[in-house]
Length: 466
Ligand code: FAD
Image (cartoon, rainbow, N blue to C red):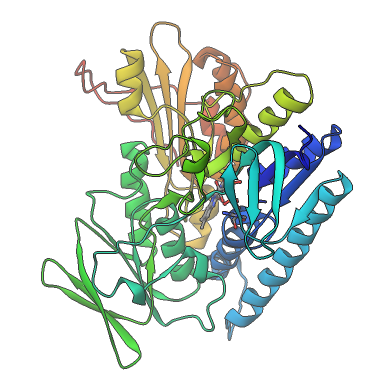
């Protein structure tokens, strides 16, 4: 049977664009549908605009720090509209570049919603057109969750709305304890917004190393954010232009903006996957194998919609592995181990490999090395913010199995550390690498003393520099 396309991709985000572009360049006839904007979450309402806002928010502390270095910056003002509009302009530029790259690879773009009609057919919702394809790739990403049973939750915005606010609020309440919540709390605070972060769990950044979690919590508070863990929301009320966040404890917080960042869900509702026999997890994630194949032989899925590791570079590599396997004659499966990740708080966090609890379970006996110090740049600045660097080493073969950094530029450092962790280098090999001085990163190759192993009960000797 002749199909209209060899491949039809639903969703032009990180995963869908990479897969479509490579398949098209390899000679496949490819169509892609996008219901919102080309580029997807990362470009339009995720990593890219967020990082611009992070940069903007860092200037606040930067101006304060500069005074200790002799700079006088008087009459400082922040203009939200300038930032918002400059970000919007760059997103438009990037989105156009993504579209143009796909078109250059021969991909036909349909700027409308697509739904699955059957194993080989897709309906384009606005035009009503039905197209057929030998294979369908679902790359529809995720969307912010809403606690629908919380009265008044509709008064809250999500990260999707945070980049286009008409004005910066004077006060904000951020609900959630994950990386997106922590990042937005830090952004708002850095831009001068009085910020409260509420989280129902015991500590922010669930899933991260416990030392990093405690460190980030303390530093968010030091920067001026009121971080309140163990708090449950009962309702959100609106009264005369302000909001009141009511907690189950009976406390009330008045604010000008409530940002919900309580998790994300795979975006599969209404997609028609059941019509093609595609099996889903309970949370709506598409179940796939190591080659991103779903339970329907002609349908594949990559990126956040599969809820494996929800990060842009992972979606890209999954999309690439799919295209290489199916259209480029090179069987490829993306290896999801030791994927580095960052949290763009102040200080930022960079992580690769196991956290301490996971390492104990997975590897048994481990050694911990830590440095908790005040970065040199902060000394003249009078900035009390501290850095934490932690290495986890498997005892039996000396391999470094986890690196956890909370410090300025941690995201940049962890990219390089990830090469060493991925390569399975030993602590002795890290130590044989000569330091770059004076840097924060030199701690990575100069950590000498082991921290007490609470399991074995040895003496604690925390290496503290600075
Ligand atoms: P997406 O990029 O979400 O793309 C899916 C696309 O499909 C969307 O454009 C959507 O409109 C479209 N679509 C959905 N359904 C349909 C349909 N039926 N028809 C047509 N089109 C459809 N990751 C990082 O690595 N680093 C970060 O710093 C980072 N920061 C983030 C900050 C925020 C606030 C958020 C929300 C996410 C962040 N992420 C970050 C995660 C990252 O954005 C995602 O992991 C990545 O975008 C996933 O790519 P994807 O291709 O799976 O889906």
